[in-house]
Amino acid sequence: MPVDSTTFRSVLGQWPSGVCVVTTTGPNGLHGMTASSFSSVSLDPPLVSVCLGNHLPSRTLLGDAGKFAISFLGKDQAHIGRRFAGQERGVTDRFAGLDWTMTPNGCPVLSDAVAWLDCTVAHAYPGGDHTIFVGAVTEAALPRVISPLLFHSRNWGQVAQPLPATVQFRETASADGGPRFEFHATGLRDLPSPERVIAAKKAGNCVVGYVADAFNPEREDEVLATIGALGALGCDEIGCVESDVIPASPLQVTRILQDASVRVRPAVLRVRLAGHNRLALVNALVAMKNGVSHFDVVTPGSGTSGLPLGDLLHLSRQLEVAGPIESDLAQIRE
Ligand SMILES: Cc1cc2nc3c(=O)[nH]c(=O)nc-3n(C[C@H](O)[C@H](O)[C@H](O)COP(=O)(O)O)c2cc1C
Image (cartoon, rainbow, N blue to C red; front, top):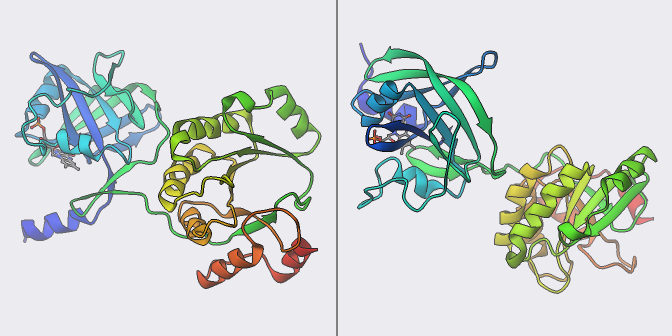
């Protein structure tokens, strides 16, 4: 006996997915729709699939054109997802006011998509009231490093990071953890040369690049660009430092770290918070929720300013996040 359609739809709604815009061209110009049925199919040859409802204009246009492009949406592009699903009232041109790039196949992709794929239709299989289009990928790019937009239970969402399994503390200006080559950069102008970084690595140093004043809302683009550049330089660790003058808000800490955690990989992301900010522990929690498990701390009497080791230790214990063991802490304190 077939499952009843209400139950079936509810069950499908429990499957979380990313969101993309599928675009193609037709006799009347460009066409696009929101889809969550995207799936990777094969690595070699590179194939992907998307399922389009047979009643949709998009299905006919895509089948006729024999080509399509996929733009993966970022966490800040739910409005685009809504628009290309026909959910924005009064919109006659779904493409208007957005920045588009034409692919070699001649399909439009969002210039600020997380990633895009250019495809020619390799197969079109019947799939009940949908058609399963398998596309041979002919071109691909990742224009913007940002966490993805999600769709779950008929709601738009974002990746919610769980707390890390463990946290690690390092005292600011201490030598524990082995030799380090540390530098602070406010922006792209302050970076050391690639040769300097290579030499430091060859000499056995862990290369740590800190971005100063990292949680200043007016510097968001510059901070993220600098983090990206530090990653490209080959830093082993990239640190975000809160300004002593402008206290960081939890909202801004989230904004920066959500994207920084994607950009720094495979480097380790560190955070150095200012101790006198009354929201310091809230910011530490927000940092943990955004994938940070490495913190710079200060110990009483060390003469440096920053988040006290004891406070962070207390927080991690309350959150049941494993921290450094007592003997390691004793070493930090010494
Ligand atoms: C998050 C989301 C995902 C969707 N995924 C699909 C999909 O994978 N396949 C499909 O046929 N329709 C999907 N839709 C519905 C289409 O986007 C919608 O019917 C759109 O208006 C079709 O465009 P068209 O009428 O111009 O062809 C989705 C809608 C939303 C909101």
